[in-house]
Amino acid sequence: MAPCVICKVKTLYHVTPWKNIGPIRKLGLLPKTMKRGIFARDPKEPRIYFFTDRETAEDAMANWLLDEHPESRYFGVVEVVLPDRAPIVQDAELAGAVYLREPVPKGFITRIEKIDVGTE
Image (cartoon, rainbow, N blue to C red):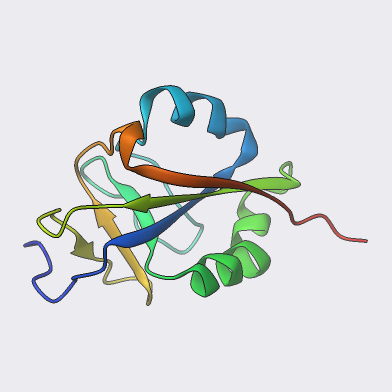
């Protein structure tokens, strides 16, 4: 799929179980080939998935990421700011989601927030 020419979004949000934050702080975000949900198709090439706004990222944590990672009570929301020329691709399977096939150096990470999604 070609890079999305209408995707002029510069600030994106990556959500991951908190246990993954240590390596992200050291190395940045690295594309991986892994299933991202029980209903999603497996990607054929390594990718990094993002949400285009904070609200969609929070919705994903509350509604399906916790189901995908039941052992995780804490998640990290990684905010990145990318240059306009970043080859962002629209995710055809999930509204409000995009992906990159290239690493995101740690210098592009502007904020990491720890979120407690545990139930009371």
